[in-house]
Image 1 (cartoon, helix red, strand yellow):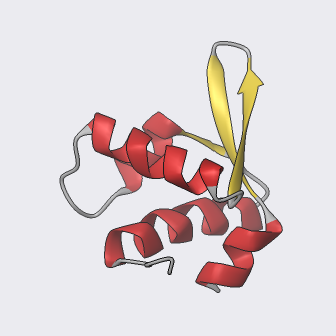
Image 2 (image 1 turned 135 degrees about the horizontal axis):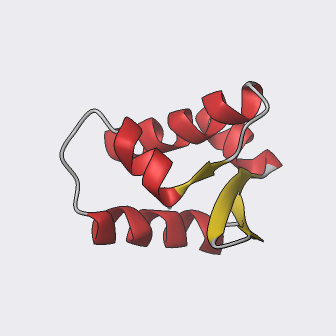
Length: 78
């Protein structure tokens, strides 16, 4: 069973809201938008989990990596 906690929902919401506005975020931008204090490593683990579940795709953009939502992220968190 896949659990969706409040933190997962907030991170997904940040990613999806940005995508709705036509923007894909970096991990740093996601981290800056969190309403709670979170270690950067913890966020990376959650993003890795999202990627393993095919909820997101990471795409290289120069020196950065953009996080792009997949259809499954919309289905799980909307």
